[in-house]
Image 1 (spheres, rainbow, N blue to C red):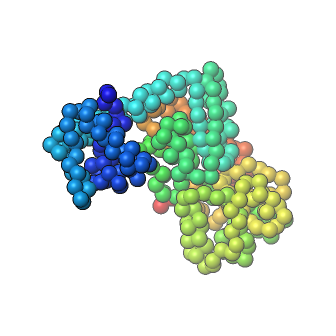
Image 2 (cartoon, rainbow, N blue to C red):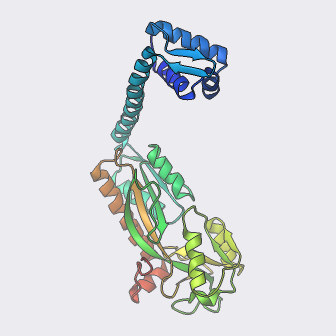
Image 3 (tube, rainbow, N blue to C red):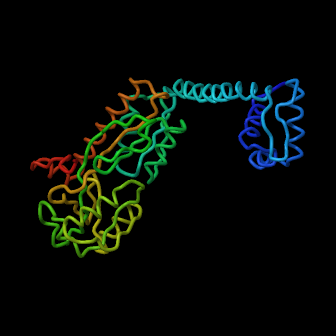
Length: 320
């Protein structure tokens, strides 16, 4: 029998478990099957790897030698597999581009701009309410880039492993039905909405906590919050069930007006993320530049945001 990586993993598992019974449970094997496998491994290596006793097993001198080598070989092979996968992915990048994003107007605009920048590339997209899910897909090599965001200055997910670059900073606006008493003003004081119910899209960041804190500073506790998809948020606002929270780039929608909150108590940072081992710097720079252009276009198409910017609004006013 030739020694294989799976045999080294078996030896390592037995040593870590301290007994064949526990190791068999970890490996999902019956103990007799594991014992037979260990005997075959020992015959291939020329001697006993473990001394058996009433309290379990302990490595022999030969076993310690094998374990020492296994601790070097197994991580090295894992690293090789990961590096090879990233290399292959980078080679495919010119032919295939996989984008992830949270829901919003930026993804479609970014795909449009990248189609011009890389006309031969096949672009696929994946949307999710979860910034953490998108970060995990980047880390696993299943996405090339992700458009996500954070509330205020909160750290993006998996910042130790991934690269995140700021696309833009938006104030958080409020969506009101056009007939709402506060819809005619330039801005809306958050305290003036103390009696309203609320609607916003879900997420796994700190936005809900930041919103609750902003309401507390304004002197009230928010009533019922509906966390639902964008279309449902729009409907709830249109029928007067709730007022909505949205990024300032939210597109102009019939029956709804979007207004900035006085003092910009909440902001949203749009971010582009990627894994540094899988992307060339020039590719990342191109995608980031297109993402910023996409955001600028979305800001122009949002009447409420464009009006606010032209009258002196500062997108980063709430960033501390």
